[in-house]
Image 1 (spheres, rainbow, N blue to C red):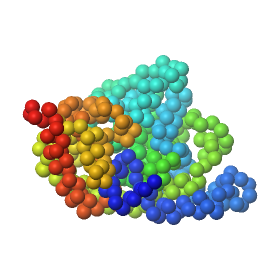
Image 2: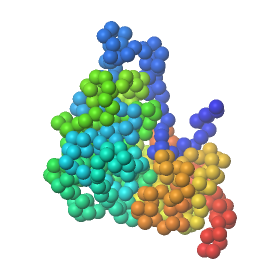
Image 3: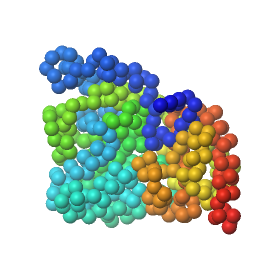
Length: 394
């Protein structure tokens, strides 16, 4: 297999990120010589356990959390499931969940399948969003009920980058004695987070979204929060998540969190400037194009642009001819010809929702890459529109 990353213009970082070279270097000893089981009594394994402790501290520092609040998991999806199912088991008399219509499939599909998974009857309130992807806080307040077990709202949307006011939402939930979970997979490393000052009970993150490897994540559980493990097994993670630790990836995640803290200013300045230039250039050079999502209340790296009267899949195929990588929606929903559930919830017109492309940048992108995309995209859209009966009718 030939994966020559240096020949690819990669703008799909909300799907996954390249592993930072410093992260690879940190991981290598634990993929080669230091292979001991961290639960072992002898030094060869026990010394490995110490690096997990170090990584836990690195993650906690980025989140503004206590070290003991960090639980290592396999991914963001596991962390989401653990938080929601834990709340339902901790409060079996409460059978109500509040979430949104634009959540990642990790939360969306879990809520849809709760009856099968838990054997209980639950009701789920899915909050509608405005046309710019933001939430109506009055609707949120009305949704909170005496039997609400947990609120699960993503910190930042994976498709549009729109940021939700989870700090305020968590405080409102706490006033009602309701647990609050946020899927912060897209937010961690891009915007400042200080859990020590917030009423967030559960926070999920995934390593491969911030330049760590795939297959490792975190569920941060605030001290004192009722908790029921999702994976019962050995004593790992202080009995909160069974299974032998994925040491190399945990070390990599710790290093990635350290780097994210150091590079967050760059994420919010240079990366944002590239994103803005790409976005403004596309909207100016391609007629009948529109931005999906709030103009300012969003992640610094993400733009979602719709090109009316063409299909997103066709756009991506033509972009692929130039080795430009982007997405027509969440990587977890690609392969479907249906418009994104996020854009449908926002009321994006059908002719535009089908032609939406998400560009998500990282610190590894360059101005030259932005120039190349701005050069190639207008003729791609123009060529596809020549073949579109809708465009001819227009």
